[in-house]
Image (cartoon, rainbow, N blue to C red; front, top):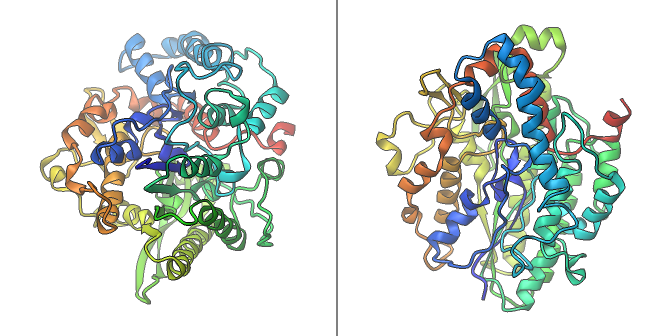
Length: 494
């Protein structure tokens, strides 16, 4: 019987610094290690991963030009070094060993135990399969652009996860179909499902809001329709309809089993440092599920991390206080839906569903929201670690000393290796309460986790360039935005 199966989006895939690159370091792999699972299968992502590994590029620039890059060197970097880096990744994933028409290099692999795919929203768990991915890639075609990541990088990623062998019998399997497959072929003891972030994350990536219709239909919105309309925030009624459908499909797949399902809540997107709060602050009282309230700090504007209030006002590139609050309130409604649905389902089948409240964990970890004093209780190993990781955007000085950050990778949205350790720690606490054999929160190898986090161990000395060099900052943002979803029809036409 399979001990662990993971369904999710970029976080569960191990997406870091703009690329689906380190599934080996992500929280579900750490869980498998603690649970003693020797054959937990997940994909490897060579050449830094899809679409572009910003950390890998920064380290190349630092290696070639040092920690202080002058104007002439930046001219050379943008004319030669950066395009060469991008071209190598593009060639590998469009025409090389990981091209869409080539099976995963390990011919023995027909499936993975972690089928998380970056960019997936709730309904993609059953709407997207390998056949859809192949169709989209074929429609798009391939071309060798000078300044571009691999085209259709989201579905290229999904294809390698959902049908690595490219076998015809697996071409129509979605994430939920693979769950059903493993249930029917030996059974599954524990399932992790963490979806929902991409139902709102686009608002922070785009710094704009484009609501879904809010009809709450039983037929989920297709990805093609989402891209066509540029929707980046699900109306709570649409989210509720999709999440109910998700649990309906899980119940059907797991009927007659004792499988335990661990569902994580959706973190508030305004905590991600890709968007920085600037300007005047506002104190807002938020009602908790238990009837108590918390006071939360919001800012006048939310703009991209390297920039200030003047930039936000002058360019109009921002979310206002009221917009940011609205997005967070939608996510709070999502999480209330998740909690209510879990309670309803557990009344019918006690012990099936277990809540991992990652939204609350991230709230407690947030640096600015907690006025510089996060109230999260770190594992004992962190007590004398200096510097202690925080949720501010990553920064280091030219001497290689970490100045801030450590929880979010360079794309400003996705967790670092250390943060994945914290996520695993929170899952293990809930799994222990659910009597999962071997689920010991103190079983994580923190020394190895810290050693695996190169951003922490070897801080990038050219980080000041992102803050000092407007052109570089805008380039980074362009690719940080690109991870979330492919261009919308509107953007293509524009």
